[in-house]
Length: 454
Image (tube, rainbow, N blue to C red; front, side, top):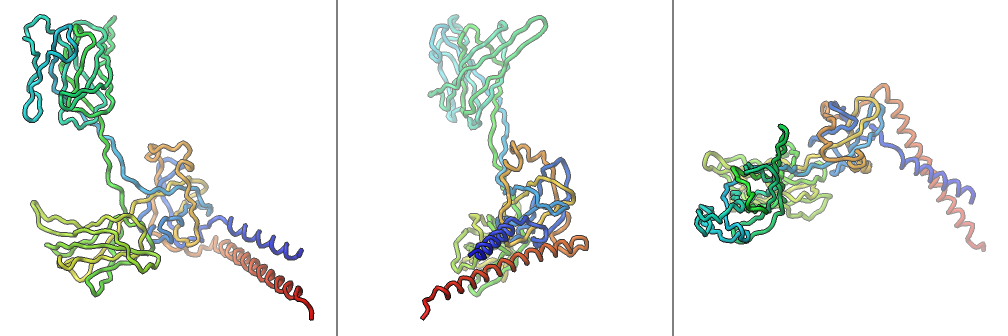
């Protein structure tokens, strides 16, 4: 039994050493040097479509970055998302004075005249303008279309005297129902040749077609010469995509076409150029992977290449849900006359990916890809870059592939160490298998000795 324990201990040690072995450049089928520029120590490298086609896993778990010493560097794998932009806009508001009796409540004694389209033509008090009791109570602002989220109001104003001007801001879309947007304060102070001015009022970012400004002290209401409203709109840009070179199709007897990909990839778009003008083809696209017999429907649409005003109009792309697929099949509807050719080419589009890595050790750094046994080694970006914020990406250095992906070749300086490493791994497996065989012999011997003797 003592021998059995020793064998088990040796096997456990061998397995632990093998599992903890760090990846080496020789473990990957393809490598390419990187050329870096900008400020480190973090660098970003955009992965071309060739890297995806060379990988053994569609999620790129077998991508690594090595330094000149052959050490694997810490990295994070990022998949592109839609870019979001904040677009600032300004509107020059139309302004209308609001007058009323000095002691009246806000909003009474007012008559609003509108056109059939809702545009204000004029605002007049219900009482005669020459009434000495009529005072300026506030201002009405027409913002235009009313679809801009307003976050700032800039006023060009004058007053009989310097000081502070406090007012309430209300909003409406129909001039009948009003809601409060809070309070604001204007200020203009002059003393000893110096001036302090406050002409802007912050707004909560709501859209409204009309704003109403009511002064707390009507007798001090300022005269407006102009009003500028501003706000921001969020604009989502397109998702950055990587497109493959056209893939040749295999035609079937039913007029359909199929394509095989190097591995299962999360395809989000396909592009099928139409060879002939005046082509219109309703199509259905399906896919499968991992040798499944069943095809899964992915998209339906109409591809066309037709004359239009100002030139030809085309629709040659289909949007897919992004499921991993290794095979695609296109079935044109025969009623449309097919794709206008005996064969078809297809390009696949996948989301662009980049690697952010922490440079360490000597150059040149190199990107390696293509290992069936590699486990995911990517770190979260917040771990790789402590205190990470999206704005830091643009300040990072950049790395570019220097040439195309190539299979590793024997190098005189490190061929012997690589061979030694391979033989060590082979030796570990030989010893491990020998230990397992020895355990089997021991178990067989114990079984025989435990049988009753006749």
